[in-house]
Figure (cartoon, rainbow, N blue to C red):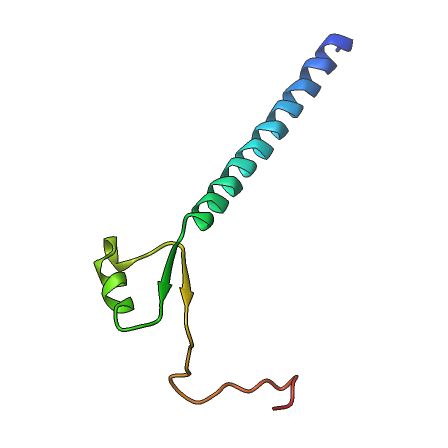
Length: 82
């Protein structure tokens, strides 16, 4: 192998690496855009209907605002008292 073939191999490896990094960047950027454009929902009597009316009863990204109350008993941590 001469110097030219080593350069071609190096450029090929760089191209594969660049393709991977670009794909990861676009995927991360798409997720960030979806979060920025997410719906803001309030915890009230219309929340369940809003979710049920969505396609497949599924909202991929949403900001839910309101006071949450536990359904059952409170979970306790063995690492923190109280």
